[in-house]
Figure 1 (cartoon, one colour):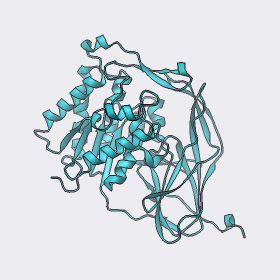
Figure 2 (tube, rainbow, N blue to C red):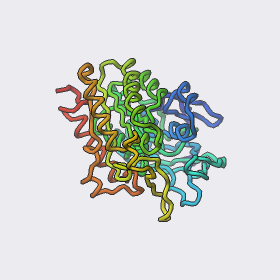
Figure 3 (cartoon, rainbow, N blue to C red):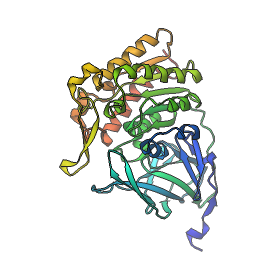
Figure 4 (cartoon, one colour):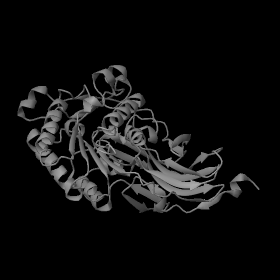
Length: 392
């Protein structure tokens, strides 16, 4: 009898998933979502609809003595017309918290972006594929399979050469984070090496990552979703998408941030709440949006197209955003001592940029993600940080 014939089939239920806010049953299996259904009904564009369905930070968690595991999924992969396709999304398998194996899945649906400004796309259906993991360590162990952070992933079936059961709750604190494409994981090479995942590992917390590529736009439905999600720690990394989307002017931005914080505090009145300003991005430090793709060099890069002179009329830059966010926290913290501010330049500033430049002008590469994760853990989870286990 072959190894394939000996594998046990385990039905995948929501009990196996971590890091999601909702699960949709599809004709193929389970599709994890990072926004609840009520919020999804209010999404105004495909950019966020796709981003929230990409399972950044979502993982299967189970206990088993298996040494061979097979996971069938239906990915939806994304390619920009006129540019080489990105590599297939990576599945990271962690054994007792350590990255032990990686795999990719062939096939799947294809979403071809035909217009980067409007996100117009063509959809081509494809087949279910399989991620194979073999020669895993023997003995009982806790396994997490982190799903690709930038591929919509329907989880279809789980096979193993020993029984599996959902992992027990860890008892660790839950960190709920919201941010933009950098928090989502753009340009990271695998899902457990995006900066929030690295910081969560260092801080020994359970991550729920609401990093949405291009879509951290201070949306009220996202604030309500965070208000209604159980969490012990919350962070918000806001500003860059408002600037590069030219989505707000100064007059609207500050009240919108106040409203976002007010909504979260309705459900979490006293837990540590950290507001993080944008990391260094020379493209937008002193130049407003909108941001536009720049294909002139043959690789996908971006450029700011706003006029710096128009900041006098309220158009936003990252420099202005940082001042606004710092001022809001200073104002509110007199009545909210558990509200904190972190300057994004302390996570990735000029010296970090000199060492690890932004490959496309907007997003850090793998080394940049590691640097941001390390700095966040050092500044936020440290004994004197806002997320310290025992605040000083």
